Image (tube, rainbow, N blue to C red; front, top):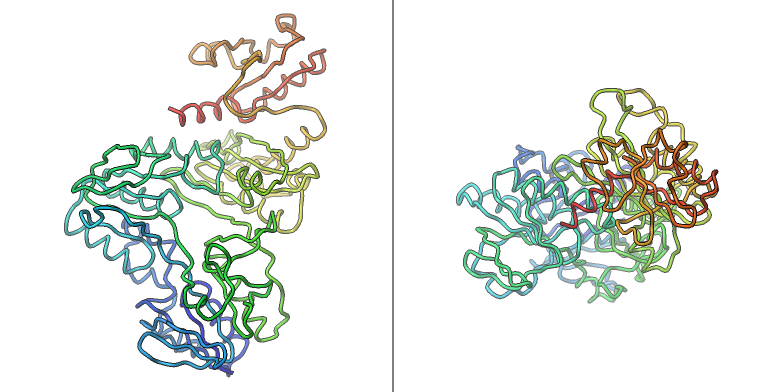
Length: 537
């Protein structure tokens, strides 16, 4: 059997290696249009910034290694320009013809570069492959730029902007949407954006690129941002023109449509990776999620299907991701509020302000955790931001989601505990308990920064209240609440808040059991509220 793989990235290389482990006789050829294969694309921003110093570490598997270890032929600089399904062959730009019995398309996506007036007036770059990173590093080394603009607030844009800052380059990030990191909700991403600004990264949100003048990037708002270089990280588009011309079905966004075994509408042609429309694990709708982890798993799945090695269907992509932003880590899985609203899915949510490990052990840091769920307790998504321990909490929740668990399973999860790593009740447990309190009617949470027609009850100590508080808030420290209930009206909504959200819950229970029928507890407390207000400035 002859197998041709178009694309030597995460999905293509993963498929080929797995296929060889299952079948030592099949002829496997990878056709890669660039001069590199198996590149650690997610590490490119850190290579640009010098965090990863050795270029050799950016290549996970060289063509020589693929040949020597796996007996897989890798043909570099071999761009496929035509697929002939009837003849079962592909033709490269050089005119080479490769016959196949099975064809695997792992063509990936290409950076989107808009038509911008004056783009030729400024050195500009994309970040897709190692050659792109080389160009940026060489430009910085040779020209010593002092100012840069990055357009696009996704993973790559945020990471490149941070690394340029680390190099001492005054950097601005421009994003058309109202926030960066679109997989997150605005309330959670506020923490991230505050961190960016605190590290002198200038944000231009709800703005876009209008034109380029010499030495200036002109935005849609009319603002001019000085720059010596421009990095375009606006997004990617499926690189699927050849697939379309071969009659392979694409969706409205140009992504390849497959079934649950990653098969296209044409016999013996499979597809995986960033060019494929996958099933959203939460909504069930088709979507595009460009992540290396799912691409690797799809490649493995195709190999098992071709080799008839207990073939199994692809269960969908959750969109689990993590990103470093200066001193913070942000992670997420599943759907956010915007996605659920667009899909017409009803949901509830909870936010807690926990700690990275036991509070009494030195070095504990705030960890903000958000879980979105439905009336049955099914987990629809989760987001977390903090300095440490963020990824492991989201990994736990992502695993519970994948196994069909509910918020009750978060409450009951038996997780590692030792003071340097967690509290006896991990933030995952705590948010599960908080959600169950809501579902049992023991408390009603409040979110946001608007308190119209409410009595705001600040239960922090008096000296803290006097330093800063919500305008019009009443201060009754939590320890005094039982003796001062008469000072509060029973005919109005009372919104209680504390530092992080736990004490306000305790006070809310006191009020609710003493004749106060309309009581709310602010989720995340004053700490979370402050992040929202600071982000709005």
